[in-house]
Length: 266
Image 1 (cartoon, rainbow, N blue to C red):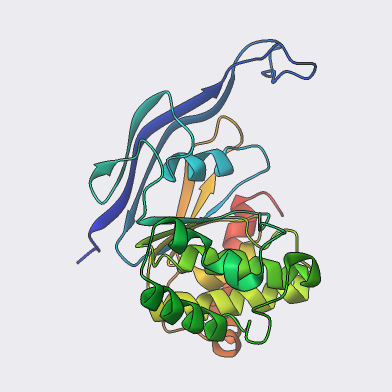
Image 2 (cartoon, rainbow, N blue to C red):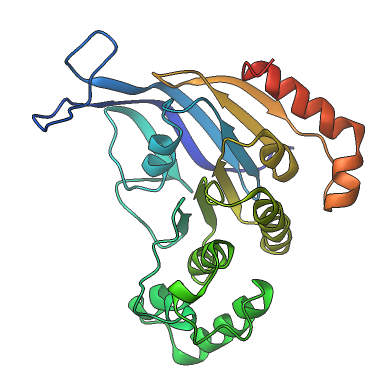
């Protein structure tokens, strides 16, 4: 029996109008609106982890911002747990490509910023902070400031900011893209461990085929702009997953090769 739908995107289109700025957006035909998305339809079920692959400029980030309620759209429908997305909601957490930590706040204060803005109780906040520091490997860094952290640690804090609010839905827009390969691999393992413990409904935008296959139940491949869902592949690797056994599974490389072909890598 398929999981109950949580995120539903139905027939969504999105265009960006040209501006009068020095560097306006332009369509392929010259001046005029740029169509970013065309008739995008996606359904993501309860506790499902789905990744989106696609060429640069195909609208992946635009799509995830629409699902987050941060960007409007021209036509179609977007709902989360049956409610239309017309703005950010507490049940949806978002992690962006850059950490966006407040430089004058410590790790502890950055982690708990959202909880305090929502006036969560001090007892609940303290309990969540202790759990996050342990699960994200940030123990001993509570009073450090962002400039004192590595890029990987800053992204851990950014992930922790979203998890601190215990969202039912976790949206991630290339959260590890700016990191070196080794740090990225380590954070993929950390993300997998955290997701397997919490099992939020998760949607990840990435350029990494390996990352998508390692983490996901399904991978969606978008077409070049205007972006639409061109292909869908089910990742039939058993859960719970661990790095050693999952990456040695022959099906892992089969999925990687298949998606690489769909992406035009070879």
